[in-house]
Image (tube, rainbow, N blue to C red):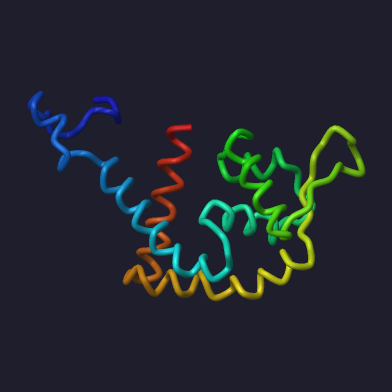
Length: 152
């Protein structure tokens, strides 16, 4: 039996029941998590998507725009407006690579670097909202990564 076949054969009408879907609780949980970030990120003047970009830059200042998009699974049509907003807020500057003029790179401004200190408490505050043990959080993260890598 293929790994894609379910152990139990569902009746045709059961296939479309919301309670039988894996995608719906995943979607709902994702939305709930992002909503939970909102009050914390409002204090930083960041949206969740902007926060993700900033985390990539705090880890790799000077990274190319293309590499940020790859790391966050975002296309340029989604990423470009995010970067423009971060630039307008004074957190990020865009420039050219010293090694290849064709490559656009992102550099944190002093304000962007300072924002990292304010953001340090966000992961711990979010962890407290989950009410899960550390091993459960690690398992959840691994399962999400497995889903993501299998459907790319």
